[in-house]
Image (cartoon, rainbow, N blue to C red; front, side, top):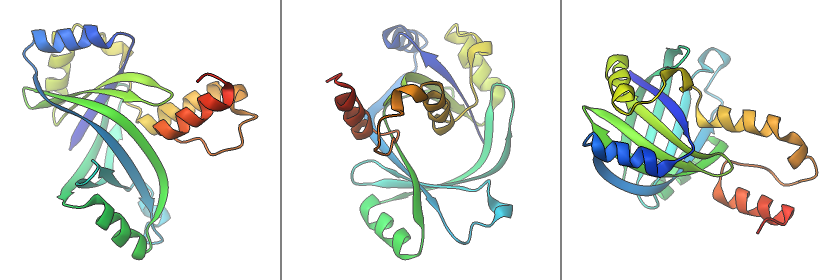
Length: 199
């Protein structure tokens, strides 16, 4: 069982300083592209299945999420993962098998670890910065939240796709004259900013 929650960040340097202060181990920084799939075999009864390929540039990570439940602050899902040597090859195989892309999203992620918890500082197009905390234990996550002096009441169990959907609805007037598809990718963000004359 994977349990996670998120905090919107206004100051990334402050949270990074806190991560260093509590001795969280820095594991690296990378751009990640998540490709989500739908398949004819995913019936309405299995609509909670989430099948994703995470592309790290060369290697990849296949993930199946299912079941679980959400609380006010925590998202809980059963999860099975397997690393693959070539994200590009697996993507080709999945498409040949009939899987269709339903969504793409990108982020730049800095990964830290402390007490078997992953602490992830994410930069997302359109949305800005977030801290995501992942563990198999709500108790451990709450302990990390306290160490970082964060307010649990400000946490969100929503995934980035839902957060982006809400952002889009709240800013729909900004997008109403934009005819291209809006995705949670840096390319989409750049094209939209160019359309608005922001770059």
